[in-house]
Image (cartoon, rainbow, N blue to C red; front, side, top):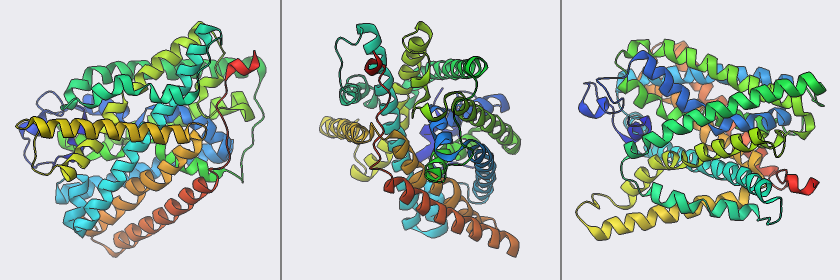
Length: 427
């Protein structure tokens, strides 16, 4: 099955063309298939950053705001879908048609930054967990720095990023989904067991110093926003999309609040940036989950980078195909390797500040994609009444203010170094 990420750069069509059909692997996505595509798009590594985000925001504040963010995200997604029904084209193309080429470039820039940011955060996640796994197996006899575990990921990722068609990665993606579900189930059960045995850790209901970091992470969590239009276009009965999306957001909101709230309640001020580091150290269950979840995130990275590669290659190699020129193909291969090296370099810089990095990505890229562009597009494409126009303008203004505030807050806290827990230090 071809991932909906392939549709990110395609222009959806009113007729159910072969191109649209291939996004589902059948004659169109059923309601059930659409449901699972949406779940897959919104639940990933971002969920395991939420416990630390709840620590940054405070338990009550974060739980309430997480619900509000989920509700606001649902609302703006539906605005985007209504705009799509009028304009009927992809996200970037919609910006060009409604506002001109400059808006298309802005939208594509946000998509590039968000997807590269997801890849960086994923690389840090994998590096941190693989270091713990290696140290447990070797008894801390051969300790390697986190930087090494970031860079070594290029060995499997370079060949995967050279894959030309995303359907070649679909089998890996399905396996990754299974591992992610298993990891979340383990975190849930461990949280409940910890609270029942030891009681709640030290928690605050509101953290006035770091709550801006929570806002960025909350926006980051719903990382599949850019996939909404391709999924709608591939649906057999698009009139059911609003109902399916509402159910999915209800489930995702419940997952996010429960994982973030329970883990913060269980571990309190000891909550790590990646909550798997709070799980019982050096046990078979924890090591297995760390391994499987890390493998899942590692092999999701090429899917995250695929739309970025397509966008940038279309800009750098216009009307030049590697199918007819070995030189062009080699140039594109070198470009993809260098792009991956850039991701790893940024990951090395942010490896000890992953919660700040996630908040910056959420504030600078995810908030515009979620809360600024959709109301602006609806304003031009579908708003009819004065109330609708005022509402769209208000949403865009509020989204812009929050974007600037959250990004500035996360950047200003970048200097606060908080290295991930290393259980070897306690031996």
